Image 1 (cartoon, one colour):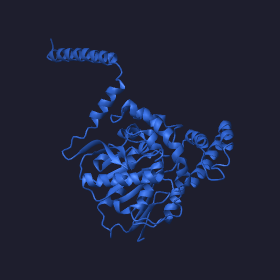
Image 2 (cartoon, rainbow, N blue to C red):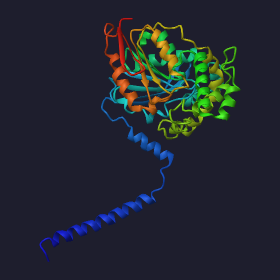
Image 3 (tube, rainbow, N blue to C red):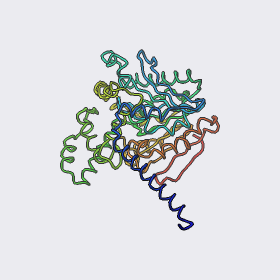
Length: 396
C-alpha cells in the first residue's frame, strides 16, 4: 500500500458518507409537504419579530372618531421618529402587505400602518351600517389627525412623518395643510393633486398607450367612455373601472406588469390578518368606493400651494394611475419650509414594491434628516429634476 493510500481511503469513506447524507436530505426535501398558509403566517411573524431591547411591535385597536380602528406599530428603536403610512384605495389597506416591503424602514423609523374607517381590520371592528353614513374625505382626514395625536401621546413624540399613498395622498395632503405643526414633513407617493386633472391625464395616457399598441378592444372600450370625466365632473364607478382596467393592463399601476394580483396576494400571508380580515378587504371596498369617489372627484389642491411643513413627493415615471407630471408641475409652485421631488425611473404607482431599495434610500437620505433640523435649517427648497440632477434654492 502506498503512503497516500490511507488518505485516499479516508476521502473515499467521507465521500460516501456525504453522498448518503445528501441522498437522505434530498428524500426529506422531496417528501416535505407544502407549508399551509396558516403556518406560513407564523413563519413570517417569527422571521420579522422585533427583538431589539428598545424595539416596539404592537397591533392595537384604538378609539378614533367615535369608532374603533386598527393600527400596527413596528420599529427596532422606539426613539426613532414615527412614520405614519396612510393607505390608498379608497379602502385598500397596506397593513396586510407591508410585511413584504417595510422591514428596512423599521431600522430608521417607528412605522405605523393604519386601517382607515371602512377598511380591512377596521371594517370588521365596527358595524358597517353605522359607518356608511360617516364615510367622507373630511372625516377620514380628521381621523388621521386623531391617529397622529394618539401616537404623539402614546410614544412621547412632538411631531411625526406622514406618508400618503394614492387615495391616502388626498388624506395626507389635507392633513399637512390643516395641521403642519404636527408633522416633520409630508411625503406623497402616487400623489393626487386634483381628482379631475388626475383622471383627465390618466385617460389620455391610457388611450395613447392603447393606440401605440394597436389594441382594438382597449381602443373601443376607452373611446366609449368619452367624455371622461363626465361633463359635470363626476366619475361613475363603472367608467373608472374600465379606465383602470386598461391603465393597469398597459403597466400604469405596476411597471412591466398588467395587474396587481401578485401584490394583493401578499395579504393572504399577513401575520396580522385573519381570513375574516382578508375577506373584509373586498367588503370594505364595496362599502367605501361609491361613497368616497365623489369626494375624490371634487378634490382640488391645484391652487393650494402654501404649506407650513416640508413637502416631499415620490413620483413613479410610468404612473398613469395618478400621473406624476401633474404633481411635479404643482410642486414647482408650492411654497413650504422645504420641498423635494424624487423620480423613480422604473416604477409606476407602487414604488415601495417596484423599487423597494430606492424607496428606503430616499426615506433615509431625504426624509429622516428633517426630524433633526431646526426651523432655520429647514428653510430650504430642493427638488430633483427630471434628469435626476439636484437643483436647490434657499428660502421660501
